[in-house]
Image (cartoon, rainbow, N blue to C red):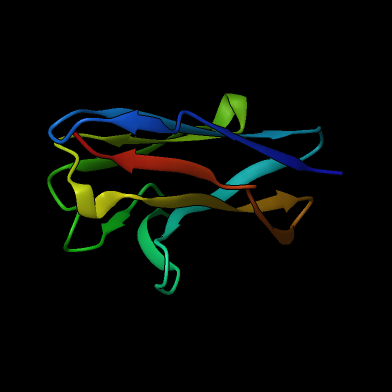
Length: 119
């Protein structure tokens, strides 16, 4: 059974930085791809960024140039480095991963971690 653990959220002032982590526990699988989503109060969940199996990345226009997604295949973990944070980045951030277990792809969501940008 795969479990995801997110960490790294918190309260930061505008212009600050945070690094979110998402680690998949278990064995016998590899990280296929991953993404980060966020949901602000009263708004729909939106895709922030994703990274494919080949390493290609995509970013929402609102975070391009400020956020950076990365992954560590050896640790089955992924990261979201968030720089120059703005109040509008305040949201609950979720990681979403695709796991490859002997050719079978399954998806999992993290529990969410709160990011609050405020002075």
